Image 1 (cartoon, one colour):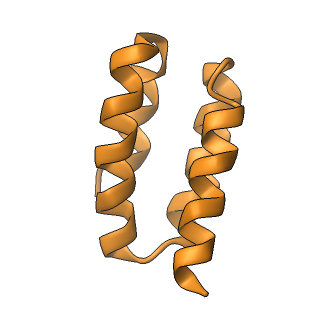
Image 2 (tube, helix red, strand yellow):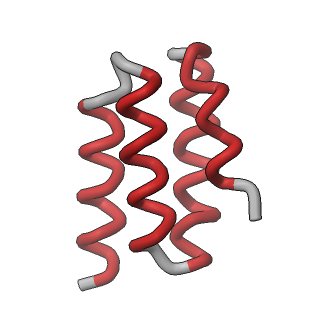
Length: 65
């Protein structure tokens, strides 16, 4: 079930990636819901997404411990 939440989170973040403010809000919610190892996987996924959409770089502050 936890894996399903991780995949759902990636889907939502991908859909809102056009707006950095909305992306940051959804990322904040995701950090509260996901397990620590899932957050690390999410960080890797977001790093790859940022290569395509550099405007999302500002949202990385929500992934720092």
